[in-house]
Amino acid sequence: MSHDAVWVRSVTGIQMHHTTDLQDAGRFLVNAAMALRAAYVRTGDDRYSSLAAQLKAVAVKARMLETQARASLHGLHAADPEQFVRCREGEDPWPDEIQAGFVPRHTCRDQCLYHDHDVLNAIMQCTCGQSPCRACAIGGTP
Image (cartoon, rainbow, N blue to C red; front, side, top):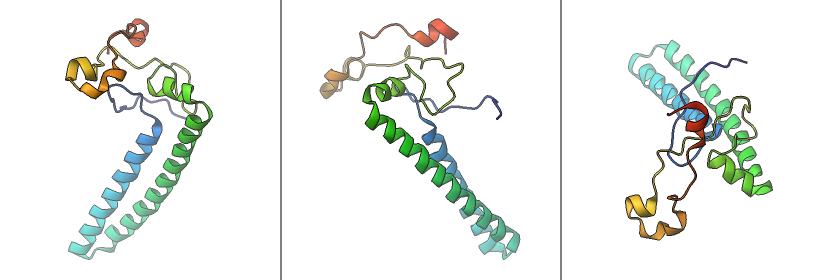
């Protein structure tokens, strides 16, 4: 297995699960297959149609992997809701992802919906009193 650095989609407030990456992969594969199909329709070149069919088959496999990853995510939520929340909040790594070298999610840029954005019904989600960013303490600023 390669441990190359990859771009990770950052969403303020949650740690993304790899289900999101698989969802992106499926969407990108289907878009590429549709573009190749359009090229085939315009040109009649069977090479485009053949490649589109291959991508469509890969997209089906990616969706199967996404379904399996999503089932793992739902299983964790059902079996241990507290751990699920810790993982979602970025305090712990997701159990089905690589554990070595895990750094907690940066919380230093989180904003309070209630106080910073005036969302009145978010009073129960106030994050103003949270502890300092553990990720900054471990690995420096983002």
